[in-house]
Amino acid sequence: MAAPRKPVLRRRADPIVKKKIEPRQQVSLEAGGGRVIANDHLEVADRRLPLVFLQNKRARRIILRLDHGKARIVVVLPTRATRKEGHRFLLQNKGWIRERLELMPPRERFRHGAVIPFMGVEHRIRHRPRAVPGIWREDNTIHVGGPREQVSKRVENWLKREARRELERRAQVKAMRIDRTITGLTLRDPRSRWGSCTPEGVLSFSWRLIMAPRPVIDYVVAHEVAHLKELNHGGRFWKLTDTLTRHMESSRGWLLQSGPSLHRYG
Ligand SMILES: [Zn+2]
Picture 1 (cartoon, rainbow, N blue to C red):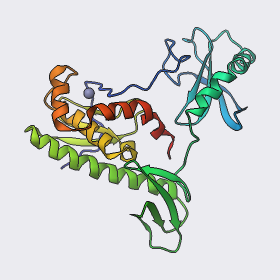
Picture 2: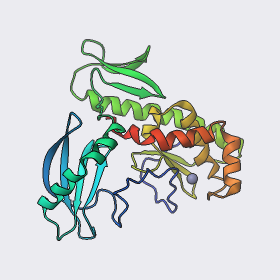
Picture 3: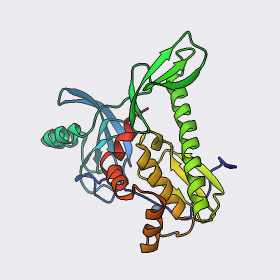
């Protein structure tokens, strides 16, 4: 399939699953918004976490949240609040942070020795300096040949290639079943959705899906392919999706529960 890589205009945002809103995040404020005014660290639950203070004019009160992707704590301050007040609020809510931390394993970069999921199965990354440059997968190990430089970037690029192959293959088969054509497939790294579909028939997916279990990948593909016929989330859409995958309900649950954890890799 010809897969244009240039960004396409999305007329319809299509969130499959919104990330669960943290209790203290639900203010009229976009996640992450604000100007960085200070960086610090906080020791909590035997871990030392980066701490960032943001100032945001639109914030109406001090907001605390955990940034899963970057494994850091964010304190958003309204204009009138001082950093000291932010710090006090942070310490008052240390228990809340500790609780949330238990649900947030540390960030895992793509480097020698790291364990990452590949289609839902844990694989260890093994750098092989003397092997020919290249990446291959064997017995739950991802071997990375060649120089140490850019092991991380190369693993990420490899995951993206694998994601494209897997997603394209499944999307083609499913589109054929409902007599529709895919005009393009793009990979992105959005924070809060796993796929989308444009009226022109371009499907877009998070490359991180390649780390999810196969049934979940299958469901997300089915979901977006179903949009080629039903560009809505009505009853007919869900019925159609259900005919394109056997894993709809379980995968929706998985994405809600475990989807955000895929953002801690790389
Ligand atoms: Zn949808």
